[in-house]
Image (cartoon, rainbow, N blue to C red):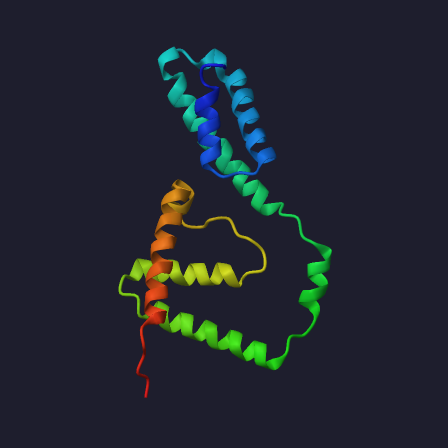
Amino acid sequence: MDRHLPVVNAIALSYHLSGPDKEDAVQTVWLTLNQHLPRLHSPESLRAWLRRVTRDACERQRRQSARLRPVDPHSLDASDEASDPETEYLRKEEIEELHRAVQRLTDPGERRAALRYLAECAQTTPSVPGSPEERADPRTAANQRRRMLRRLRRLLEEPTWDI
């Protein structure tokens, strides 16, 4: 355990979990190792096995913590109040401008990702990543989302000549 703890901790840190969530994931890894130890026949494959189990445990912990996000009751009261018409109009204009920028994206996959991202932003509850790519490697999906958002920002900054 002393030999492999730094690797397990490094992987858990890479998922940017909160302190308690990271500790839960690491503890789950060691519990899983204890349960599967009789089935592990090759000591040289232990490190790779621990890496896979750690990634799985961290991903499970991330999904679970996303579902169990605490809500401040005072923020619920503020959302129940009706907002003024000017704010609603401006919000609607921003959303329409974003959708126009999304339609100007040339890559169809990027356009779908942008529309999915906008739909997720409009939801009130956080969602679990839905596409197979996002479930397979959340870091890759995050990088693609960042690139797509940079392109959208550039498109929004370009002047449009709608007459």
